[in-house]
View: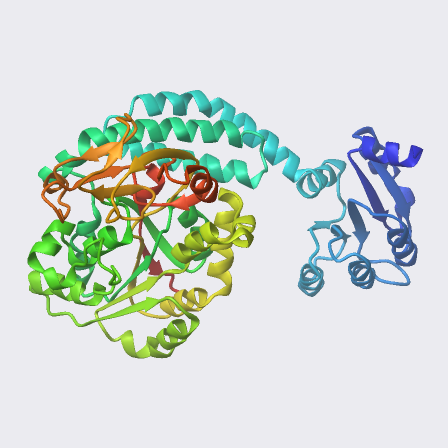
Length: 524
Protein backbone atom coordinates (compact mmCIF):
# COMPACT_ATOMS: atom_id res chain seq x y z
CA UNK A 1 0.00 0.00 0.00
CA UNK A 2 2.93 2.32 0.75
CA UNK A 3 4.34 1.74 -2.74
CA UNK A 4 1.01 2.59 -4.35
CA UNK A 5 0.73 5.76 -2.30
CA UNK A 6 4.22 6.81 -3.38
CA UNK A 7 3.44 5.90 -6.96
CA UNK A 8 0.45 8.19 -7.20
CA UNK A 9 2.22 11.06 -5.44
CA UNK A 10 4.81 11.26 -8.23
CA UNK A 11 4.57 12.96 -11.61
CA UNK A 12 5.25 9.59 -13.19
CA UNK A 13 7.08 6.30 -12.88
CA UNK A 14 10.01 6.12 -15.32
CA UNK A 15 12.34 3.33 -16.41
CA UNK A 16 15.74 4.54 -17.63
CA UNK A 17 17.75 1.99 -19.58
CA UNK A 18 21.38 2.89 -20.36
CA UNK A 19 24.67 0.99 -20.09
CA UNK A 20 26.27 4.22 -18.81
CA UNK A 21 23.56 4.89 -16.25
CA UNK A 22 26.13 5.86 -13.56
CA UNK A 23 27.06 8.89 -15.66
CA UNK A 24 23.44 10.09 -15.63
CA UNK A 25 23.04 10.61 -11.87
CA UNK A 26 22.83 14.38 -12.29
CA UNK A 27 19.96 14.00 -14.80
CA UNK A 28 18.19 11.54 -12.51
CA UNK A 29 18.47 13.83 -9.48
CA UNK A 30 17.08 16.71 -11.54
CA UNK A 31 14.02 14.67 -12.56
CA UNK A 32 13.49 13.34 -9.03
CA UNK A 33 13.39 16.93 -7.75
CA UNK A 34 10.67 17.52 -10.37
CA UNK A 35 8.62 14.76 -8.73
CA UNK A 36 9.39 11.73 -10.91
CA UNK A 37 10.07 8.25 -9.56
CA UNK A 38 12.86 6.63 -11.57
CA UNK A 39 13.96 2.99 -11.83
CA UNK A 40 17.35 2.51 -13.52
CA UNK A 41 18.82 -0.53 -15.30
CA UNK A 42 21.95 -0.93 -17.42
CA UNK A 43 20.85 -3.45 -20.04
CA UNK A 44 17.94 -4.63 -22.15
CA UNK A 45 17.41 -7.92 -20.30
CA UNK A 46 16.84 -6.15 -16.96
CA UNK A 47 14.56 -3.64 -18.69
CA UNK A 48 12.39 -6.48 -20.01
CA UNK A 49 12.21 -8.03 -16.53
CA UNK A 50 11.22 -4.70 -14.97
CA UNK A 51 8.44 -4.18 -17.53
CA UNK A 52 7.06 -7.63 -16.77
CA UNK A 53 6.80 -6.67 -13.09
CA UNK A 54 5.61 -3.04 -13.24
CA UNK A 55 3.73 -0.61 -15.44
CA UNK A 56 5.85 2.40 -16.33
CA UNK A 57 4.54 5.71 -17.58
CA UNK A 58 7.53 6.07 -19.86
CA UNK A 59 10.76 4.25 -20.75
CA UNK A 60 13.96 6.10 -21.70
CA UNK A 61 15.82 3.53 -23.80
CA UNK A 62 19.44 3.73 -24.95
CA UNK A 63 19.81 2.41 -28.50
CA UNK A 64 23.45 1.26 -28.30
CA UNK A 65 23.98 -1.26 -25.51
CA UNK A 66 26.02 -4.44 -25.20
CA UNK A 67 24.01 -7.65 -25.34
CA UNK A 68 20.45 -6.96 -26.45
CA UNK A 69 20.35 -3.76 -28.51
CA UNK A 70 17.94 -0.94 -27.92
CA UNK A 71 15.87 -1.84 -30.99
CA UNK A 72 15.65 -5.50 -29.90
CA UNK A 73 14.68 -4.40 -26.39
CA UNK A 74 12.05 -2.08 -27.86
CA UNK A 75 10.52 -4.97 -29.80
CA UNK A 76 10.30 -7.11 -26.63
CA UNK A 77 8.81 -4.26 -24.58
CA UNK A 78 6.10 -3.76 -27.23
CA UNK A 79 5.26 -7.47 -27.03
CA UNK A 80 4.80 -7.17 -23.25
CA UNK A 81 2.78 -3.96 -23.50
CA UNK A 82 1.90 -2.67 -26.98
CA UNK A 83 0.87 0.74 -25.60
CA UNK A 84 4.05 1.34 -23.60
CA UNK A 85 5.56 4.79 -24.15
CA UNK A 86 9.21 4.53 -25.22
CA UNK A 87 11.63 7.38 -25.93
CA UNK A 88 14.76 6.27 -27.81
CA UNK A 89 18.01 7.92 -26.69
CA UNK A 90 21.03 7.37 -28.96
CA UNK A 91 24.33 8.74 -30.22
CA UNK A 92 23.51 7.52 -33.71
CA UNK A 93 21.88 9.73 -36.31
CA UNK A 94 21.66 6.97 -38.90
CA UNK A 95 18.43 7.28 -40.85
CA UNK A 96 17.92 3.51 -40.91
CA UNK A 97 17.94 3.28 -37.12
CA UNK A 98 15.55 6.21 -36.85
CA UNK A 99 13.19 4.59 -39.35
CA UNK A 100 13.22 1.29 -37.46
CA UNK A 101 12.54 3.03 -34.15
CA UNK A 102 9.72 5.12 -35.63
CA UNK A 103 8.32 2.01 -37.33
CA UNK A 104 8.05 0.39 -33.90
CA UNK A 105 6.04 3.41 -32.74
CA UNK A 106 8.40 5.14 -30.38
CA UNK A 107 7.04 8.28 -28.78
CA UNK A 108 10.15 10.41 -29.34
CA UNK A 109 13.78 10.24 -30.49
CA UNK A 110 16.57 12.07 -28.63
CA UNK A 111 20.21 12.44 -29.77
CA UNK A 112 22.95 12.28 -27.14
CA UNK A 113 24.19 14.22 -25.34
CA UNK A 114 20.83 15.18 -23.88
CA UNK A 115 20.31 17.84 -21.25
CA UNK A 116 17.81 17.50 -18.40
CA UNK A 117 15.43 20.12 -19.82
CA UNK A 118 15.20 18.16 -23.09
CA UNK A 119 14.14 15.11 -21.17
CA UNK A 120 11.69 17.12 -19.05
CA UNK A 121 10.07 18.45 -22.23
CA UNK A 122 9.74 14.92 -23.59
CA UNK A 123 8.12 13.78 -20.33
CA UNK A 124 5.64 16.63 -20.41
CA UNK A 125 4.79 15.89 -24.06
CA UNK A 126 4.24 12.20 -23.49
CA UNK A 127 3.01 11.85 -19.90
CA UNK A 128 1.37 15.14 -19.05
CA UNK A 129 0.24 16.40 -22.45
CA UNK A 130 -3.46 15.73 -21.80
CA UNK A 131 -3.48 17.45 -18.41
CA UNK A 132 -1.48 20.42 -19.68
CA UNK A 133 -3.66 20.79 -22.79
CA UNK A 134 -6.80 20.62 -20.65
CA UNK A 135 -5.51 23.25 -18.23
CA UNK A 136 -4.34 25.63 -20.97
CA UNK A 137 -7.50 25.16 -23.07
CA UNK A 138 -9.75 25.81 -20.07
CA UNK A 139 -7.77 28.91 -19.16
CA UNK A 140 -7.96 30.24 -22.72
CA UNK A 141 -11.70 29.58 -22.95
CA UNK A 142 -12.26 31.32 -19.61
CA UNK A 143 -10.33 34.31 -20.95
CA UNK A 144 -12.46 34.26 -24.14
CA UNK A 145 -15.78 33.66 -22.40
CA UNK A 146 -16.63 37.30 -21.76
CA UNK A 147 -15.49 38.32 -25.25
CA UNK A 148 -17.79 35.73 -26.81
CA UNK A 149 -20.67 36.84 -24.59
CA UNK A 150 -20.18 40.44 -25.74
CA UNK A 151 -19.86 39.30 -29.35
CA UNK A 152 -23.22 37.49 -29.08
CA UNK A 153 -24.87 40.61 -27.68
CA UNK A 154 -23.37 42.78 -30.46
CA UNK A 155 -24.49 40.59 -33.40
CA UNK A 156 -26.32 42.71 -35.96
CA UNK A 157 -25.73 40.99 -39.30
CA UNK A 158 -25.67 37.46 -40.66
CA UNK A 159 -21.88 37.75 -40.95
CA UNK A 160 -21.72 38.48 -37.22
CA UNK A 161 -23.64 35.29 -36.49
CA UNK A 162 -21.40 33.24 -38.78
CA UNK A 163 -18.37 34.55 -36.87
CA UNK A 164 -19.96 33.72 -33.51
CA UNK A 165 -20.91 30.23 -34.64
CA UNK A 166 -17.40 29.54 -35.97
CA UNK A 167 -15.92 30.69 -32.67
CA UNK A 168 -18.27 28.54 -30.59
CA UNK A 169 -17.55 25.46 -32.72
CA UNK A 170 -13.82 26.11 -32.36
CA UNK A 171 -14.08 26.05 -28.56
CA UNK A 172 -16.46 23.11 -28.60
CA UNK A 173 -13.89 21.04 -30.48
CA UNK A 174 -11.02 22.27 -28.31
CA UNK A 175 -12.79 21.50 -25.04
CA UNK A 176 -14.17 18.13 -26.15
CA UNK A 177 -10.67 17.07 -27.22
CA UNK A 178 -9.42 17.64 -23.66
CA UNK A 179 -12.37 16.19 -21.75
CA UNK A 180 -12.75 19.56 -20.10
CA UNK A 181 -15.23 20.33 -17.33
CA UNK A 182 -15.93 23.61 -19.15
CA UNK A 183 -18.16 21.94 -21.73
CA UNK A 184 -21.27 22.72 -19.66
CA UNK A 185 -20.36 26.41 -19.59
CA UNK A 186 -19.86 26.36 -23.35
CA UNK A 187 -23.20 24.60 -23.82
CA UNK A 188 -24.91 27.38 -21.87
CA UNK A 189 -23.18 29.92 -24.10
CA UNK A 190 -24.33 28.07 -27.23
CA UNK A 191 -27.90 28.11 -25.91
CA UNK A 192 -27.65 31.85 -25.30
CA UNK A 193 -26.29 32.33 -28.82
CA UNK A 194 -29.10 30.27 -30.35
CA UNK A 195 -31.68 32.37 -28.52
CA UNK A 196 -30.18 35.49 -30.06
CA UNK A 197 -29.86 33.81 -33.45
CA UNK A 198 -33.52 32.76 -33.43
CA UNK A 199 -34.58 36.36 -32.71
CA UNK A 200 -32.34 37.52 -35.56
CA UNK A 201 -33.86 35.04 -38.02
CA UNK A 202 -37.42 35.92 -36.99
CA UNK A 203 -36.64 39.60 -37.61
CA UNK A 204 -34.72 39.23 -40.88
CA UNK A 205 -35.54 36.00 -42.72
CA UNK A 206 -38.62 37.21 -44.59
CA UNK A 207 -36.80 40.43 -45.51
CA UNK A 208 -33.97 38.35 -47.01
CA UNK A 209 -36.42 36.61 -49.29
CA UNK A 210 -38.02 39.87 -50.38
CA UNK A 211 -34.66 41.46 -51.22
CA UNK A 212 -31.59 40.74 -53.29
CA UNK A 213 -29.45 41.57 -50.25
CA UNK A 214 -29.06 38.39 -48.25
CA UNK A 215 -26.50 35.72 -47.46
CA UNK A 216 -26.00 32.79 -49.79
CA UNK A 217 -29.12 30.64 -49.46
CA UNK A 218 -29.92 27.13 -50.66
CA UNK A 219 -31.16 28.15 -54.15
CA UNK A 220 -27.96 30.18 -54.72
CA UNK A 221 -25.45 27.30 -54.55
CA UNK A 222 -25.29 26.52 -58.25
CA UNK A 223 -25.37 30.18 -59.27
CA UNK A 224 -22.61 31.32 -56.89
CA UNK A 225 -20.36 28.25 -56.65
CA UNK A 226 -20.95 25.71 -59.41
CA UNK A 227 -21.57 27.84 -62.51
CA UNK A 228 -18.54 30.17 -62.03
CA UNK A 229 -16.24 27.12 -61.95
CA UNK A 230 -17.88 25.64 -65.03
CA UNK A 231 -17.45 29.01 -66.76
CA UNK A 232 -13.70 28.72 -66.10
CA UNK A 233 -13.65 25.36 -67.87
CA UNK A 234 -13.28 23.44 -64.60
CA UNK A 235 -14.78 20.02 -64.11
CA UNK A 236 -16.90 20.01 -60.93
CA UNK A 237 -17.94 17.32 -58.47
CA UNK A 238 -20.73 18.59 -56.22
CA UNK A 239 -20.81 16.37 -53.12
CA UNK A 240 -23.85 16.81 -50.88
CA UNK A 241 -23.60 15.20 -47.44
CA UNK A 242 -27.15 15.13 -46.14
CA UNK A 243 -27.60 16.57 -42.62
CA UNK A 244 -23.96 17.66 -42.30
CA UNK A 245 -23.04 20.19 -39.62
CA UNK A 246 -20.15 22.64 -39.46
CA UNK A 247 -18.57 20.92 -36.44
CA UNK A 248 -18.59 17.65 -38.35
CA UNK A 249 -16.94 19.39 -41.29
CA UNK A 250 -14.19 20.73 -39.01
CA UNK A 251 -13.37 17.15 -37.99
CA UNK A 252 -13.37 15.84 -41.58
CA UNK A 253 -11.33 18.80 -42.80
CA UNK A 254 -8.35 17.52 -40.82
CA UNK A 255 -8.44 14.38 -42.95
CA UNK A 256 -9.03 16.12 -46.27
CA UNK A 257 -6.39 18.81 -45.73
CA UNK A 258 -3.69 16.20 -46.31
CA UNK A 259 -4.80 15.79 -49.93
CA UNK A 260 -6.70 18.99 -50.78
CA UNK A 261 -6.29 22.73 -50.58
CA UNK A 262 -9.42 23.97 -48.81
CA UNK A 263 -11.46 27.11 -49.41
CA UNK A 264 -13.97 27.17 -46.55
CA UNK A 265 -17.26 29.04 -46.68
CA UNK A 266 -20.64 28.79 -44.98
CA UNK A 267 -24.13 29.44 -46.25
CA UNK A 268 -27.67 29.58 -44.81
CA UNK A 269 -30.14 26.76 -45.35
CA UNK A 270 -33.68 27.91 -46.11
CA UNK A 271 -36.63 27.12 -43.86
CA UNK A 272 -37.73 24.48 -43.21
CA UNK A 273 -34.26 23.02 -42.75
CA UNK A 274 -35.44 19.70 -44.13
CA UNK A 275 -34.46 17.70 -47.19
CA UNK A 276 -37.76 18.13 -49.01
CA UNK A 277 -37.34 21.89 -49.02
CA UNK A 278 -33.65 22.70 -48.67
CA UNK A 279 -32.14 20.06 -50.97
CA UNK A 280 -34.77 20.51 -53.66
CA UNK A 281 -34.04 24.25 -53.47
CA UNK A 282 -30.33 23.59 -54.05
CA UNK A 283 -30.88 21.40 -57.07
CA UNK A 284 -33.62 23.49 -58.67
CA UNK A 285 -32.15 26.90 -57.83
CA UNK A 286 -35.67 27.88 -56.75
CA UNK A 287 -37.58 28.43 -53.54
CA UNK A 288 -40.11 25.67 -52.78
CA UNK A 289 -43.22 27.60 -53.87
CA UNK A 290 -41.60 28.32 -57.23
CA UNK A 291 -40.76 24.63 -57.69
CA UNK A 292 -44.38 23.75 -57.03
CA UNK A 293 -45.60 26.49 -59.36
CA UNK A 294 -43.21 25.89 -62.28
CA UNK A 295 -42.76 22.11 -61.99
CA UNK A 296 -45.84 20.70 -60.22
CA UNK A 297 -44.98 17.18 -61.37
CA UNK A 298 -41.62 17.43 -59.55
CA UNK A 299 -42.96 18.73 -56.22
CA UNK A 300 -44.50 16.39 -53.64
CA UNK A 301 -46.70 17.85 -50.89
CA UNK A 302 -46.19 16.88 -47.25
CA UNK A 303 -49.39 14.83 -47.06
CA UNK A 304 -48.57 12.68 -50.08
CA UNK A 305 -47.17 9.19 -49.63
CA UNK A 306 -44.57 9.54 -52.37
CA UNK A 307 -40.93 10.12 -51.39
CA UNK A 308 -40.09 13.80 -51.13
CA UNK A 309 -36.64 13.73 -52.74
CA UNK A 310 -37.07 11.41 -55.70
CA UNK A 311 -36.94 14.11 -58.36
CA UNK A 312 -33.53 15.61 -57.68
CA UNK A 313 -31.95 14.70 -61.02
CA UNK A 314 -34.73 16.28 -63.11
CA UNK A 315 -34.65 19.35 -60.84
CA UNK A 316 -30.94 19.78 -61.61
CA UNK A 317 -31.77 19.51 -65.29
CA UNK A 318 -34.43 22.24 -65.02
CA UNK A 319 -31.90 24.59 -63.44
CA UNK A 320 -29.28 23.96 -66.13
CA UNK A 321 -31.89 24.51 -68.82
CA UNK A 322 -33.19 27.70 -67.18
CA UNK A 323 -29.68 29.18 -67.24
CA UNK A 324 -29.18 27.84 -70.78
CA UNK A 325 -26.27 25.69 -69.82
CA UNK A 326 -25.23 22.89 -72.12
CA UNK A 327 -23.03 20.88 -69.73
CA UNK A 328 -23.71 17.17 -69.41
CA UNK A 329 -23.98 15.90 -65.86
CA UNK A 330 -24.52 12.76 -63.81
CA UNK A 331 -26.41 12.34 -60.56
CA UNK A 332 -25.78 9.64 -57.95
CA UNK A 333 -27.52 9.05 -54.63
CA UNK A 334 -25.62 6.79 -52.23
CA UNK A 335 -27.84 5.00 -49.72
CA UNK A 336 -26.34 1.49 -49.73
CA UNK A 337 -23.05 -0.28 -50.28
CA UNK A 338 -24.21 -1.44 -53.71
CA UNK A 339 -24.88 2.22 -54.65
CA UNK A 340 -21.36 3.05 -53.53
CA UNK A 341 -19.78 0.15 -55.41
CA UNK A 342 -21.60 1.18 -58.57
CA UNK A 343 -20.37 4.76 -58.23
CA UNK A 344 -16.75 3.68 -57.78
CA UNK A 345 -16.92 1.45 -60.85
CA UNK A 346 -18.10 4.43 -62.90
CA UNK A 347 -15.57 7.01 -61.65
CA UNK A 348 -13.24 6.96 -64.64
CA UNK A 349 -16.21 7.24 -66.99
CA UNK A 350 -18.12 10.00 -65.21
CA UNK A 351 -14.99 12.07 -64.67
CA UNK A 352 -15.24 13.07 -68.34
CA UNK A 353 -18.41 15.04 -67.60
CA UNK A 354 -18.19 18.74 -66.74
CA UNK A 355 -20.51 18.23 -63.74
CA UNK A 356 -21.17 15.29 -61.43
CA UNK A 357 -23.50 15.47 -58.43
CA UNK A 358 -23.19 12.90 -55.63
CA UNK A 359 -25.46 12.72 -52.57
CA UNK A 360 -24.36 10.70 -49.52
CA UNK A 361 -27.16 9.98 -47.04
CA UNK A 362 -25.18 8.24 -44.26
CA UNK A 363 -25.17 11.08 -41.69
CA UNK A 364 -28.91 11.62 -42.04
CA UNK A 365 -29.51 7.88 -41.69
CA UNK A 366 -27.28 7.88 -38.59
CA UNK A 367 -29.31 10.71 -37.09
CA UNK A 368 -32.60 8.85 -37.66
CA UNK A 369 -31.12 5.54 -36.47
CA UNK A 370 -29.99 7.24 -33.27
CA UNK A 371 -33.59 8.27 -32.62
CA UNK A 372 -34.98 4.79 -33.23
CA UNK A 373 -32.26 2.58 -31.75
CA UNK A 374 -31.09 2.57 -28.11
CA UNK A 375 -27.84 0.93 -29.19
CA UNK A 376 -27.02 3.67 -31.71
CA UNK A 377 -28.00 6.31 -29.14
CA UNK A 378 -25.51 4.79 -26.71
CA UNK A 379 -22.79 4.80 -29.38
CA UNK A 380 -23.49 8.45 -30.17
CA UNK A 381 -24.49 9.55 -26.69
CA UNK A 382 -23.21 13.11 -27.00
CA UNK A 383 -22.02 15.65 -29.56
CA UNK A 384 -18.41 14.47 -29.41
CA UNK A 385 -19.38 10.83 -29.98
CA UNK A 386 -21.67 11.90 -32.85
CA UNK A 387 -18.70 13.61 -34.51
CA UNK A 388 -16.51 10.60 -33.83
CA UNK A 389 -18.89 8.25 -35.63
CA UNK A 390 -18.98 10.65 -38.57
CA UNK A 391 -15.17 10.57 -38.70
CA UNK A 392 -15.09 6.78 -38.42
CA UNK A 393 -17.55 6.51 -41.31
CA UNK A 394 -15.40 8.81 -43.39
CA UNK A 395 -12.24 6.84 -42.70
CA UNK A 396 -13.63 3.36 -43.15
CA UNK A 397 -16.33 3.67 -45.81
CA UNK A 398 -16.28 4.08 -49.54
CA UNK A 399 -16.36 7.86 -49.24
CA UNK A 400 -12.68 7.79 -48.28
CA UNK A 401 -11.86 5.92 -51.51
CA UNK A 402 -14.13 8.31 -53.38
CA UNK A 403 -12.18 11.37 -52.23
CA UNK A 404 -8.89 9.58 -52.82
CA UNK A 405 -9.85 9.11 -56.44
CA UNK A 406 -10.91 12.75 -56.73
CA UNK A 407 -7.36 13.81 -55.82
CA UNK A 408 -6.17 12.06 -58.98
CA UNK A 409 -8.57 14.00 -61.21
CA UNK A 410 -8.33 17.46 -62.67
CA UNK A 411 -11.43 18.83 -61.02
CA UNK A 412 -12.86 21.08 -58.33
CA UNK A 413 -14.82 19.44 -55.52
CA UNK A 414 -17.61 21.35 -53.79
CA UNK A 415 -18.63 19.75 -50.49
CA UNK A 416 -21.84 20.98 -48.92
CA UNK A 417 -25.11 19.92 -47.34
CA UNK A 418 -28.80 20.76 -47.38
CA UNK A 419 -29.06 21.41 -43.62
CA UNK A 420 -27.61 20.50 -40.24
CA UNK A 421 -29.26 19.21 -37.06
CA UNK A 422 -29.56 20.06 -33.38
CA UNK A 423 -29.81 17.94 -30.26
CA UNK A 424 -33.31 18.55 -28.91
CA UNK A 425 -34.14 18.63 -25.20
CA UNK A 426 -37.11 20.99 -24.66
CA UNK A 427 -40.63 19.82 -25.64
CA UNK A 428 -43.23 22.32 -26.88
CA UNK A 429 -46.89 21.28 -27.03
CA UNK A 430 -48.72 21.59 -30.33
CA UNK A 431 -52.06 20.33 -31.66
CA UNK A 432 -52.82 19.53 -35.29
CA UNK A 433 -55.22 17.49 -37.38
CA UNK A 434 -54.34 14.15 -38.90
CA UNK A 435 -52.91 15.79 -42.02
CA UNK A 436 -50.28 17.67 -40.03
CA UNK A 437 -46.72 16.65 -40.97
CA UNK A 438 -44.65 14.50 -38.61
CA UNK A 439 -41.45 16.57 -38.41
CA UNK A 440 -40.53 17.52 -34.82
CA UNK A 441 -38.97 20.89 -35.64
CA UNK A 442 -41.60 22.41 -37.90
CA UNK A 443 -45.31 21.95 -38.49
CA UNK A 444 -47.64 23.05 -41.25
CA UNK A 445 -51.40 22.76 -41.27
CA UNK A 446 -54.61 24.71 -41.33
CA UNK A 447 -55.66 24.20 -37.72
CA UNK A 448 -52.53 24.23 -35.62
CA UNK A 449 -52.96 24.83 -31.91
CA UNK A 450 -50.04 26.04 -29.81
CA UNK A 451 -49.23 28.37 -26.97
CA UNK A 452 -48.22 31.84 -28.04
CA UNK A 453 -44.65 30.98 -27.21
CA UNK A 454 -42.17 33.75 -28.05
CA UNK A 455 -39.62 31.11 -29.00
CA UNK A 456 -41.74 29.93 -31.95
CA UNK A 457 -41.51 31.41 -35.42
CA UNK A 458 -44.99 31.45 -36.95
CA UNK A 459 -45.55 32.19 -40.62
CA UNK A 460 -49.28 32.65 -41.30
CA UNK A 461 -48.75 33.64 -44.93
CA UNK A 462 -46.50 30.98 -46.52
CA UNK A 463 -46.08 33.10 -49.65
CA UNK A 464 -43.89 35.53 -47.69
CA UNK A 465 -41.54 32.62 -46.90
CA UNK A 466 -41.83 31.33 -50.48
CA UNK A 467 -43.34 28.08 -49.25
CA UNK A 468 -46.18 26.01 -50.71
CA UNK A 469 -49.60 26.45 -49.19
CA UNK A 470 -51.70 23.28 -49.58
CA UNK A 471 -54.71 25.14 -48.14
CA UNK A 472 -55.76 28.77 -47.97
CA UNK A 473 -55.43 28.73 -44.19
CA UNK A 474 -52.11 26.82 -44.04
CA UNK A 475 -49.53 28.22 -41.63
CA UNK A 476 -46.00 27.11 -40.73
CA UNK A 477 -44.68 26.95 -37.19
CA UNK A 478 -40.94 26.55 -36.53
CA UNK A 479 -39.27 25.41 -33.34
CA UNK A 480 -36.17 27.35 -32.30
CA UNK A 481 -33.05 26.63 -30.24
CA UNK A 482 -33.19 23.05 -28.89
CA UNK A 483 -36.98 22.62 -28.64
CA UNK A 484 -39.12 20.02 -30.37
CA UNK A 485 -42.85 19.63 -30.89
CA UNK A 486 -44.85 17.07 -28.94
CA UNK A 487 -48.54 16.26 -29.05
CA UNK A 488 -50.55 16.39 -25.80
CA UNK A 489 -51.86 12.87 -26.44
CA UNK A 490 -49.46 10.39 -24.86
CA UNK A 491 -47.23 13.36 -24.08
CA UNK A 492 -44.88 11.78 -21.54
CA UNK A 493 -44.09 8.79 -23.74
CA UNK A 494 -43.54 11.03 -26.74
CA UNK A 495 -41.21 13.35 -24.86
CA UNK A 496 -39.11 10.57 -23.32
CA UNK A 497 -38.75 8.91 -26.76
CA UNK A 498 -37.63 12.01 -28.65
CA UNK A 499 -35.80 14.02 -26.01
CA UNK A 500 -32.04 14.08 -26.60
CA UNK A 501 -32.35 13.15 -30.29
CA UNK A 502 -30.84 15.00 -33.25
CA UNK A 503 -33.55 16.70 -35.30
CA UNK A 504 -33.77 19.24 -38.09
CA UNK A 505 -36.35 21.44 -39.76
CA UNK A 506 -36.29 24.40 -37.39
CA UNK A 507 -34.17 27.40 -36.51
CA UNK A 508 -30.74 27.08 -34.94
CA UNK A 509 -27.19 27.88 -35.93
CA UNK A 510 -26.46 24.15 -36.20
CA UNK A 511 -29.30 23.62 -38.70
CA UNK A 512 -29.05 26.81 -40.74
CA UNK A 513 -25.36 27.82 -40.90
CA UNK A 514 -23.82 24.99 -42.87
CA UNK A 515 -20.62 24.18 -44.80
CA UNK A 516 -19.96 25.21 -48.39
CA UNK A 517 -16.45 24.02 -49.16
CA UNK A 518 -14.34 24.08 -52.32
CA UNK A 519 -11.52 21.52 -52.56
CA UNK A 520 -8.62 21.50 -54.98
CA UNK A 521 -6.41 18.41 -55.13
CA UNK A 522 -2.80 19.05 -54.07
CA UNK A 523 -0.20 18.55 -56.78
CA UNK A 524 2.28 15.87 -55.81
